View 1 (cartoon, rainbow, N blue to C red):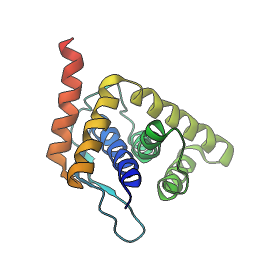
View 2 (view 1 turned 120 degrees about the vertical axis):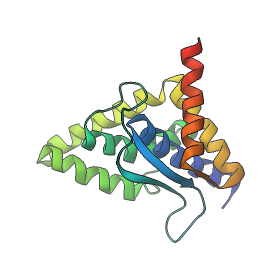
View 3 (view 1 turned 90 degrees about the horizontal axis):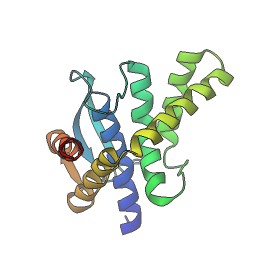
Length: 165
């Protein structure tokens, strides 16, 4: 994988991880080692770890899953300046299925997806959240994988920086 592609993949996977942590999910592993058609993966446990530690993320499980699915593409786009729809196609298909479950028709599902993407962009605009994406992505570029405890530690360090100000 080229250096540019590796960095964008790292931001993509870090975006998933940070959104997962923001909504209280347990992250088990994040990696950017290409396997099959996937360039990277963010593995999570089912259910929540307890109360979400962040920016009023989401008490709604379906919305939380949407934020996680869209977080990768949004973080990559924030870094690169463009959406990689092809690279995020599997995430988008899953997000569309969830939006249809919530909305019931395609028009309303589009609105659900837009609101979720707006929320993801709002969260990523927060310095502590974007800082967490950047440090996790840097760790992935350097080591190609990171366990969930490391990702959570880096995330919490970025959140702590804001509370100290």
